[in-house]
Image 1 (cartoon, helix red, strand yellow):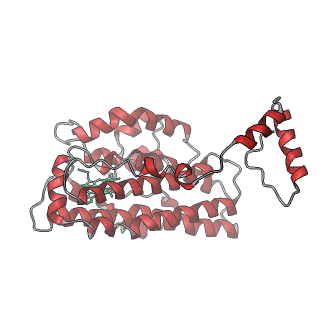
Image 2 (spheres, rainbow, N blue to C red):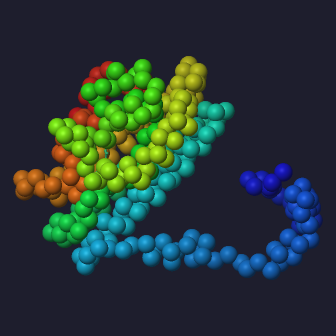
Image 3 (cartoon, rainbow, N blue to C red):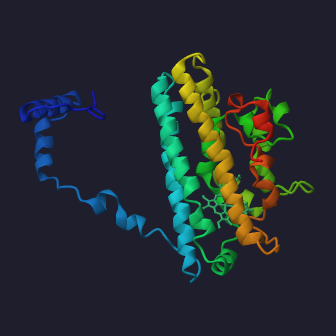
Length: 314
Ligand code: HEM
């Protein structure tokens, strides 16, 4: 058996060497060679292990405005936090036998990360010069945070696809199983499809060209295995399930109400604080679209009362 994940207790050197020998014998390898290799291997250092130099070389502004670097780095921080959230969520959905306390522990970790995301959004709202932002953003069209794939994958991992369709058709979509039909009605299409002509914006077209196949593959793979499905399969009378329920509600509210409100307030500050109603880089009708009460993106509707759902984001 591979030793990955094996937790060693107190052990003397002879026992450790015995374990190493067993590991490589099981793999049909000569342990002697690996032990000599270990002797030659260099001690770890921080900068190589964390890949600090690579990480710090990933900021490539398009303009000379110093605050553009803040914009890039904060988006990168967000992508890393989304990766941390995904890391926990994947361990739940990929493990049908997960025990409730472990599930709860994972969701509490997720809530910590989502809390960092919301608490830190002031880096955008207060942390950039208004004039600089409104200049460097002109060089970024049609790119938009809308094109964050992790954001969309997470939705698919968390809930059932029909719950991600737009509010006009959501009820009707409950009975639909065809993934292509459901994808045509996803709420986020509202940001990029012209309702009169049906034409897609460049922001949406670019995004779909790159990610739609992978998103559909994920939707097939996790149908019936999402965080919502895993939760509903548990015995709802169990006291630990009640604690998990609490953690899931917190995530739904933080991620789908608090974060979007912090985000839309920031957009309103830079794009509309003087009533100028500037076009977004991605070209959406953002004042309507970005509001949580318009999107009604609720991952776990079974955990909310009718009134709470009615007042979502208000
Ligand atoms: C000054 C800061 C920001 C402004 C003014 C802003 C503005 C906007 C606007 C107007 C949209 C609508 C799409 C469009 O037409 O472009 C959008 C979408 C989006 N942005 Fe931002 N944004 C900011 C920062 C961020 C950050 C830091 C992230 C983190 C990755 C982010 C993630 C997103 C996401 C995920 C969407 C799609 C939301 C959805 O579909 O519900 N934004 N943003």
